[in-house]
Length: 607
Image (tube, rainbow, N blue to C red):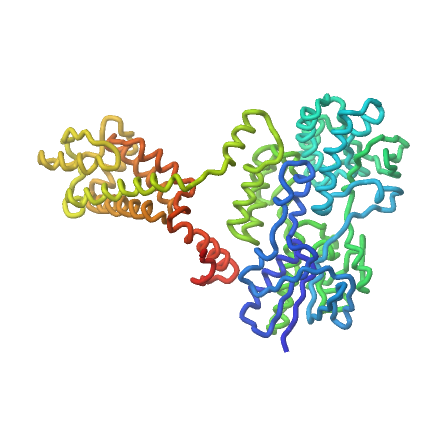
């Protein structure tokens, strides 16, 4: 009988568990792996503030689960589980029943309100894509209404944006508000001084886990941009139009966003498991629940206590490592191997304060702030996306972050972005691509006719032959003229840089036949590549490099070759070219190899 493994939840931990189970058990025909989630997409929860603050579109934080699981043995089922009988090893949705032999509980968490009166009813949260979209639309509506409001008190409340909680999420959300508010004020003709941005934190400091130096930098940056930071100020009551802090201060606002903490989803109450703080399921060193060893809890759902007696915080790294450990241990039990103890290793944290400033505290690296921390944050995000979905997701991330940005910036930057994301009609590049290929092919064949393949043509010589031709075809003509006068074609001219001259004299001249043949093969290959439209992007880069090489050596050049090659970078081979079929195939092959460490020639062809 097949072993049935069910992963409940496609969060960070759930996807990591699915990937690991496929890797460990892909050759086991008697194992069924099913991932169940109520959505068809995985949400990048760490980027929700960007949606709320209109930096990116909602699609930017959605990753298709089918895309992630393609070419794996993991089956995806979109359904909402409403009940469970762990003793009987069954899960229930509204109209279906799912049996399992092993369960990985990664169904996620929800905001914790700590019994603060009125907060659940009157505050916004930021723990789902729906939350982010709702908050985004509300803020737009507040600015629109404020632009028409005559009553000063009501207008002030509409233009006060408060965030309850000075942790990572709260600070990152305020960072987005800093940038977005400037744009909204301009859009609705509102004085920026009328807008009030507030962080309200119950602890003595914001970002309490962060290094003090970085924490102070983040605070200074926010205060410089008009953010009020209220510490030692727990919220004790929330009304529809205001909230009250412990010292009795009442702050009128129509927008209070609660980011003060999370707890395991209330669904856990139906499972009959031992829970700790904030309903987190208590697990042992293998991520197993105490009551049922075949049920594992991961990510935000688990309460794991390390060797130092400290409970792991609910971070992405925690989710990934626990998901991996749970999957490894289920596979170990099925395969009769030894289980693996969860040994968490947290590599640090990064906090963005808007799109152009961040702080990063990473293991093995100096403390980073500003643009360097922003770059690291983008690289970390792309590393994760590459791990679950390959280069396609990385490219989409770049597009959403830098080319499809939802905000309106200054005229210059906005113009650059609008031009960069302009779509072109590649069909009109086809004649240029074929002609460029023809010229390269002709140049290579001319060199063969001029004995580049059989005789030494380039070398130290005073003869230049007075060639008047230029560009990629010039070398053959110059060599012919030089040979006719009994000399060799020199690759060093008056304008050749010293470093290049040294390379030519030390490496090229002693191996002139090798380099002649490399040039001939390269030019013929470029001709074929452009004519057939195969690997056009790479061919364009090589074409540009070849012409720059001619420019550095002989001084002979033909600029149209270079500019035409730049045009080929726009994907010219994808129209009436082999790249139309080859690029999608290679993309699928990379994705298949990433999951299975082998290729499948018949996967991913575009017909």
